[in-house]
Length: 200
Image (tube, rainbow, N blue to C red; front, side, top):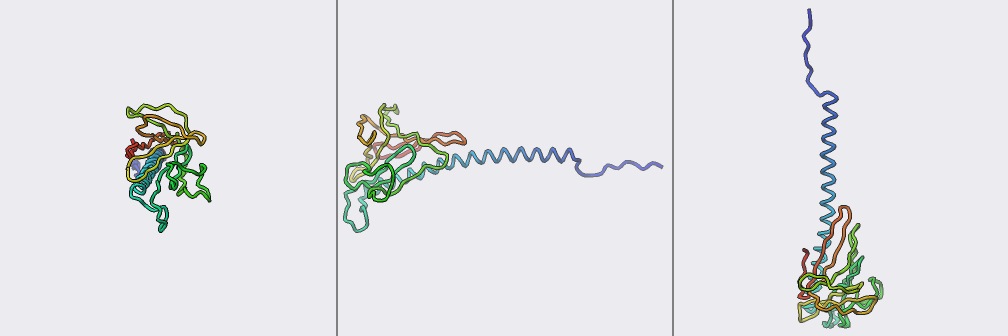
C-alpha cells in the first residue's frame, strides 16, 4: 500500500532568504532616509537657535540691559560678528558698533560674550550684502558686524576687510549662508536693517 504524500507546513530556505533580503532593503532605505532628516534638523536647529540669539541681542540692546549687573553702564550695544567659520556674540562697550577684539573669543577680550561654532560638517559661505530687490551688492569684505542699540530696533550693519571698514551702500539686509554636507544642503539666515530676522 502506498502512503499518500503530505505537504509539511513551514518555510522553505528560498522563501526565508527572500524575506530576509526584503527586510534588509527596507531597513537600509529607512536608515538612509533617517540620516538625511537628522542632518536637515541639525542645520535648521542651528539657524533657529542663531535667530533666537540675535533676537535676544536686539532685546538687550533696545531694552537697555546693563553691561554687567551693578555696573550702571547702560550705554552699550549687543551684536554679532560673522566670520566664515564661526560667529562671535559680543557686547559693544565703546559704542563704535564693532567687535574690537581679534577674530576669536579669547581671555582678556572684554567685549566677547560667546564664540558660536558651526555644527559638524557645516561650512559658512560668509555674509552677502543685498539691496531691497534681493540683488547682491558687490563688495570685498571678510567680516560683518551687526549691532543693536537703544532706542532703535534697527540693526547697524558694518562690513570689514582686513580690519578696515568698507562702505557698502544701499544695504537692505545681509544673508548669512551655510552649507551642510551629507546630504548637500544650503540654508540662509537674513538680518534686515529694520531688525527683522528670517530663515527663508
